[in-house]
Image (cartoon, one colour):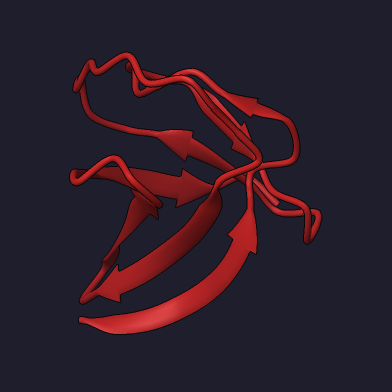
Length: 73
C-alpha cells in the first residue's frame, strides 16, 4: 500500500456510512463505496488516502479503521 494524498476533512467529520461523501481541504471529494458504519465526531481531522492496487482507502486520524472510497473530483 502506498500513500496517495494527505489533507484534512473540510469541516466536521461524523463517522463512516455507506455512500457518504468526504470533502477535503485540498478540494478533493471522496465517496465511501462499501458499507461500514462508525460514529466519531472530530473537527477537521487529518486524512490519509492510501492506494492499494486498484482501490483507495480513507484513513482518518484517531479513528483506527479505514474505509474504501472512490474519488469524485
